[in-house]
Amino acid sequence: MSGDKTQGRSGAAAGEDFTPRRLYGRSKGKALRPGQARLIDELLPKLLLDLSAPAPHDARALFDSRVRETRLEIGFGGGEHLIATAARNPDVGFIGCEPFVNGMARLLARIAAEGLGNIRLRQGDAIEVVDWLPDASLARVYLFYPDPWPKRRHRKRRLVSPDNLAKLARVMTPGAQLRFATDIDDYAGWTLARLAASPDFDWRAQSAQDWLSPWDGWTQTKYEAKAMAAGRKPVYLTFARR
Image 1 (cartoon, helix red, strand yellow):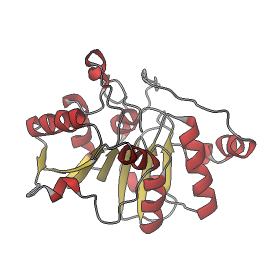
Image 2: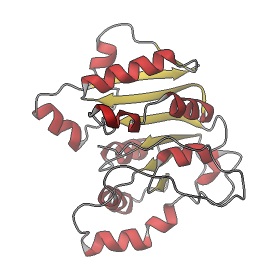
Image 3: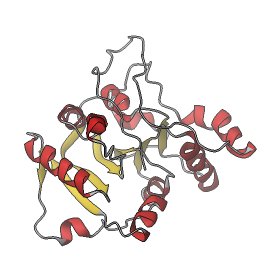
Image 4: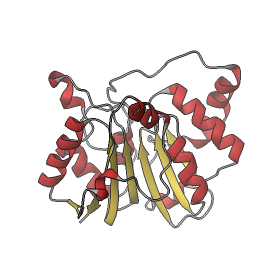
């Protein structure tokens, strides 16, 4: 499950010093195995986005090979969906963001094992990447099982907020999809309410199957499997950028 981030300043102009924002939630778990630590030290720096540098005019330029579009996954957890989707779509560039170092290490192991060259990474706050990217640069955004912050006093930490939706709208192309999944009913309702109030997105569901069934080619994550085993039912919401 991904960690939500605080809302804050907009992206820095080209050439400005980059200042990290506060990030809630854990960033570390169990100690890394030697092989995982080596991947963090050697492979991760080659794939990290440099947010202190000016953003490219076209996000596709972030990738060594030619890609037809760029997508973003916010909080990829163990990376199950990101790896499977990137492997199926070698002509698409993927940006994956995750603050949890253990999840990053697991993803790096899969990238190395499968030789994937169409993934770039950010270890930290995804919204800082969104602030940095140029306008209309993303063809799709994935937000799966973000931290629901169930306590009322913590709900301001939820990633789905009017401010963050406006930021996402800026960097998404017209018609681009925002795909959201959660097993928490309250967060599903929260998200629907804020997307309905947004001037930038449409929810085009026609029947219950549109939100009760996952997308074609869906890769179940370990978190989703645990949630379903515990009796919680996921919902899968798709919103389109106007």
